[in-house]
Amino acid sequence: MKRKLIAFLAAPAAAAAVFIGGALPAQAATPRVSYYSSLSQCSQAADYFSQRGTIVQFCTADVYINGKPSRWRLMYNL
Image (tube, rainbow, N blue to C red):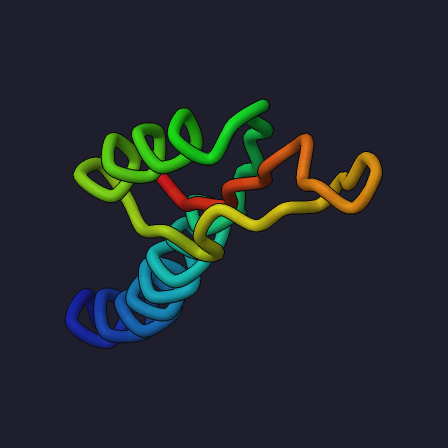
């Protein structure tokens, strides 16, 4: 009787462990965004974050003044 009860409870416990284990990495993979005023600052930050995580999108100009980029965006995961 005890063996059947243990086998009955083991399957849901294993399924819960897989579900919880699969849900946590998805939360950790949320992209973070940082903004920089120059390409060199953004590139230095990209070097730093690439050693600690994953670069999602390298330095991209997202604000222009008189046709010249004035703000750079870096997207990364830690």
